[in-house]
Amino acid sequence: MNDTYDETRRAFVLGLDGVPWGLLERFVDDGELPNFERLLTEGASGPLRSTTPANTPVAWPSIATGTWPDKHGLYEFMKLDSSYKQSPYSSADVRQPPLWELVSPSVVANVPMTYPTSDPGEDSAVVSGMMTPEIDGDAVNPDSFRAEFERRFPDYEIDIKWRDYAGREQEFLRDLDRVLDGRRELMEMLMENEAWRLFFFVYVAPDRLQHLIWDEETLLEHYEKLDDVLGDVMDYCEERGSDLYVVSDHGFAPIEKVISVNRILADEGLLTVKDSDGTRGALAGVGLDKERVQGALHKVGITDEKLVENLPKPVVDFFAERIPGSHGLYDVDFGQTDAFLHGLGSVYVNDTERFEKGTVPPKAVERTKRDVMRVLEDATDPETGDPLLTVHDSDDRFPNDPEAPDIVVEAKEGYHVEPKLGEHAVEPATDIAAYHRPEGIFFAWGDDVRAGSTVEDAAVVDVAPTVLHSLGQDVPETADGRVLSEIYDPDSEPATAAVRTNQYAKREAADATETDTDTVEDRLRGLGYME
Image 1 (tube, rainbow, N blue to C red):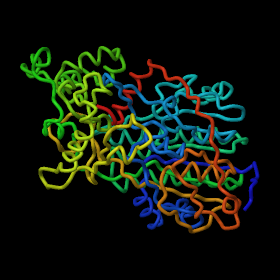
Image 2 (image 1 turned 180 degrees about the vertical axis):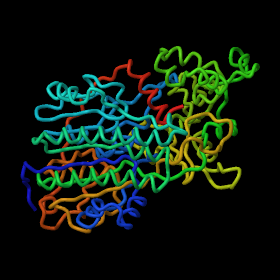
Image 3 (image 1 turned 120 degrees about the horizontal axis):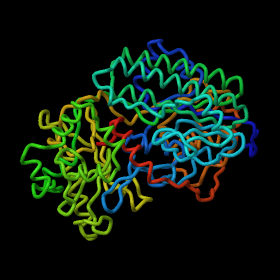
Image 4 (image 1 turned 90 degrees about the horizontal axis):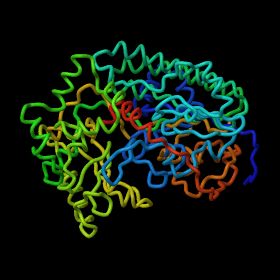
């Protein structure tokens, strides 16, 4: 086997957030997407298994680092401290080095969970993606590139809040196209840099669209635009002799109902809702709850987003803790609660060693966890009797991190886990059409790739090792994924070279800033990821 590589080798990773394998394959089979069809026939392809649960803040770091969350450190959009307060995860929390810190020069843009950025070095450029509070010196680097970026994109949009557009779908589609066009212009600007060895660019528009609209005619129109983008990228890679990898962080499917895990726990006596004493009781007694307050404010043009944008977080927290309603963790009496859901799938036992108001002593944690798992596994839809959740023991999923959630839950097909404490365990889905599923996409294309090959049981953690090996770079010893060697032509360099590993130095992460929390929380509400 060869031990050396051509150091001019290149890899382009095109991320398409939320694109599901089954839907894309059907569009290709129908002859609707010619460039994706080229990927299928001329390259390697197959479904890509996501993280558990299949969520953006967990999956993109797994793609970038080749590790599961118990090594890279991110489990949700928001992290939870011992006093049950939430703050955003950021790039500062990613424990393992992402691809672009191992390959230089690199061009990286719009990848979720990359804010704050640091100076990527000469001939490199980075624009952070989802969870970026504002376009500032921590979002765009280096300084020399930021000046040109600001000149060409004075009104750059970080994201589009699909949940704000319920009932205004045509306006949403127009605005989504505008954001997509802006992303494409950014990609074209970055393509002017000829020095890169790694180019990593993500489009999140398909995820935003599918959450609000699951109509295949509308989806096909959007996918045709993605197909045009792909065609440009393929031409660009072919001219430069670069291998191309096209991946999504998870799949998607329509939903009909939402699940309140915290209501299930409350109905089983494992979680206690704040009682009617004091301010909350007085307000509830006169019929003043969250929904009524929101309705009154909306009539005068004051949305939740405006409140969050204009009031300090302590003020928002103060009222949320006192006005009864489905505020998620604000409504929980932790002093009388044994277990609770945080975020989109993380269930914690209220351990006295982990939480300030914990109720479960260390010796009872495992027993309580088993009881909670049984309750969640037995939970069914009262209308159909169908099971609601797939339940995972963290000891099995996240053996390398003692601070991981105790239990992870995933909704069954047709359902979605919401973070709120609902009135009922199962409610109809309103203002949301579809949600994440585990099966995303993987394509590889280029001179090294064996035409018509398929990947075998590929997972998101396999992307980074495969890309690094294709570049002749050492794979981190900490990687959980493998090199997808079955995709390469037998005579190509990646096929004939041995996979080398390296114990890279511990990652030096950037510092997060507390002032970013309010803006990030507001944006997550607009994206439907936070109550």
